[in-house]
Length: 420
Image (cartoon, rainbow, N blue to C red; front, side, top):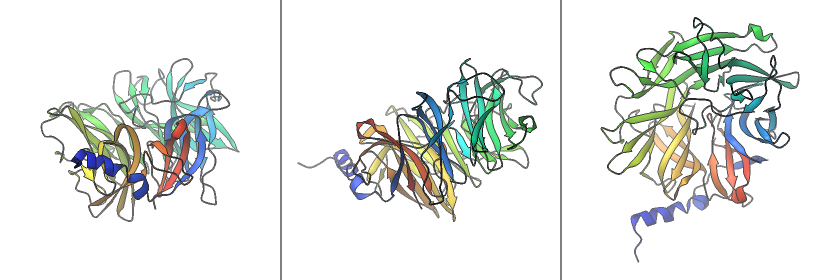
């Protein structure tokens, strides 16, 4: 009997684990439960994730650091529900995404840079806030940046509402989005001065929503600059555009094509999950194809010489380098080295659309090559089999990709792959 085309595709997909794996995966530690996958520091020397702490039996933020021998340390819990928050008697309740439209996408993850971790959390009193943990003299101390209901600096008495978890930059700035009690969105920078009195830490407003753009979410920061999606409130009301913040002028600059190639025309298009690096961005766009009643996902970038109006990966297309068809692609992270763009992302395939794997697109002079990093059915060096793989908000720096993997028998591990 002759096989149909879908049958051939599914058959081809089953060959991925044995034929196409080119990246070595190194297990860092076993984990009881992983709540948010790991995000790596800008300098690639540490990563952070949230999971279950065996000692407290509650959620915690874990940190792993690069050692002198080139391997990563066993992750340790640096913030738990029992951690003391300096200057208050309140305790943490949970470490989860706080607001925005990205709760399922890994954005709002804790972020680490050197000895500072920034994160969002809810407290036992049910208020939400943004915080940082800093390691000084071998010990971690936790401080609050802002809490719901507090007066927001520079706003004539308006109050903090919700928050996105802050990003910590290479110059110790925590950059985060907040919504105020008049529904204005503000992007703040909070300067942390290690070793100094926290009263010397300073807030500054980088930008606000206005009559032309609103509903900020999914901020992506690198080298103190950032990209952010926002909804248009004029001309094309409700449409999402991507913006890059110009720190010199203090303005948000729209940086997306007016038209999106390969997505159905005439349908409402939504964009999510920007990743900013070196003045370039990558992000997910999706729309509903009404005649087939399905969502079409694509990821766009203007890095690596790619034509911005054309996606480098889209659902429903067969990719011969990995023998698969995607049904969903999302959560990209962009990294650029030697004019070559590396974009890691999560993909769901036609073989099982409910489970996910981790992939990388390598873009050079406009040519795209997609490779699998960790996918369902793939065997590790010891023979164990990957069931699912996930990455956090910032998933590649200096060629290093930290991941959360679920193996057979629901075993969870934190692992690292080296891309170059």
